[in-house]
Image 1 (tube, one colour):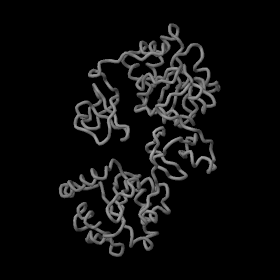
Image 2 (cartoon, one colour):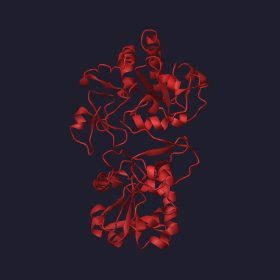
Image 3 (tube, helix red, strand yellow):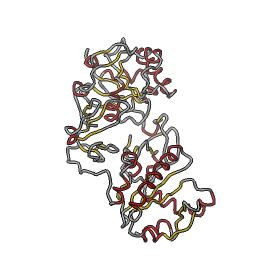
Image 4 (cartoon, rainbow, N blue to C red):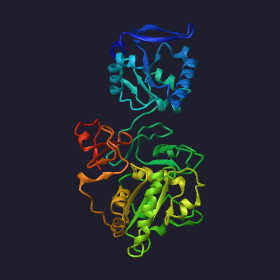
Length: 409
């Protein structure tokens, strides 16, 4: 372990002495045989400050019990220019080797230098009172399960009972907006939860409309005063349904929404019914009535938005996703078609058809930027990483390669 740490940090580390209130140099070799937590953080972000204070307090509370087996190395992201020039390459190597994308991040290394967990910050947030003891024993809070060929793997989701991460198979979740608990099939019968739990739809699996809306008890009309049965969506020769994800707090949502309303109303007398349901990210139920009453559509009750978000995983906000009545997704990017083709797109969807796409090299991805060259909007082919959060590349940058498989959108 000492050899690994010396390669990462050099021969000397700095240690803060509580008695003298100063930093002193210590040999990296002192950590040989210990389990080490690498703590990447920054003092300039309030959440990192709070996290650091809590981590330090917990560490002090259990220090006498774990100090012979466990230690934390703090790696600051607040380097001044002089320090960065001296240590820039070393820091860059650390960030790259451990795939550090944000702060705070905790990477737990075994006494032999192997990664016990790379999700230490999340584990600490869940079990701050006992997690340091668990790490000092060389264990992680989370455990993994190899999915069977017919099982879905829910990336970045864990069971709050057995701590399987990622959760594999059927997922049950709490519908309460303030509660984000999830459970696997094995644990669902073992727990008693204070709020109702529902079974999530499996992404990319095709469902009938009755199956798709089975967990949703009702819809709300445009003024959110009246409850309506969900079956109203697929009556009267409906060929497709639009799912419109939006948030009141983003001004661009209002601009696109007004264009969608205008194009929608202009086509309603000449096309098959094309119902749209609103799925709002807004927690506040008391938004201005004017905001809702202008929309000639139904709304999903706010507690159920996560069911639809998890199934469709929209990459943008606002996002219009269109599904045919037999459960096939016609497009994840209906909002782009509204901007470029307006009412013509709605006419196609009302017939249950896909819209003819523009030439890929000319297409403009509104409000989407390339994470490498910062082109905004991306023009032409767009490549998306479903593993990294909100990660997109333009055609030129994807040629340079990426650590995960990229999807051509």
